Each structure stands twice: as C-alpha cells, then as structure tokens.
Image 1: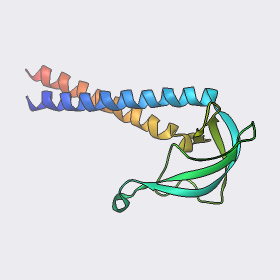
Image 2: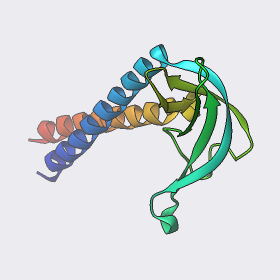
Image 3: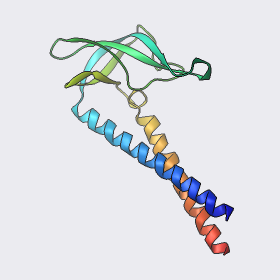
Image 4: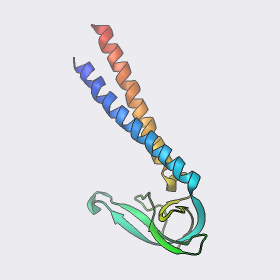
Length: 140
C-alpha cells in the first residue's frame, strides 16, 4: 500500500510540474514570436522574496522602443546571484503592445532553461510514479 501512495504523490507532483513547465515554455515561445529586440542598459536590481532565504534579484532595464519611447522595466526572470549587474549592456525582448513586459535575450535570461528543467523533473517524477505503481501492482 505505501508504494501505491508513493506513486500517487509522485505522479501528482510530476504531472503538476510537467504541465507547469510545458505551459511556461509555450508562453515563452508565444512571447518570443511577437517580441521585438532592443539594446538595453541594466540600471538597477530589485530583490523579491525573503532576504535571509536567498531572495532573487531581478534586473531593471532601461531601453528605447522602436517607436522612440524610453522604458524602464523589471525583467521576468531573476536570480541569486543576479543574472547581470548594473551598468551592463544587454539585449531586451519586449512586447510591442506592452513594452514593460520584457525578457532578457538568451536561454537563461528568458527562463527557457528553468522551465525546461521544470518540465524534465516533472516527467521524471511521472516515470518514477509509473514504475512504482507497476512494481506495486506486480507484487499483489
């Protein structure tokens, strides 16, 4: 009975992580299709989360849109340590309909690496759950 319970817990967690990772990768793909590129400058960092527990630092980027508007916005993905430091030149991807919706160019800054890992962990848990369930049912 504990093996079946383990497979249910792992399966539920795996399904949740796999769906979340897949959803975010599809959202990122959609964003990248409509996004425009612009050179930007990291002008600051914003910490979010509990400081004692390694709060993530999100870069604040200043850039100019193709139509000449100057925008200052927080990147979607942060890190600890920070992905980039103030003063660094970066390439920004931004939604032309909502220029404050930005992402840094590249797999790490856009979140593709993180969401890909999330998807793989979820799939791994699903396979673990399936194997545990098959083993438990075979023992009956």
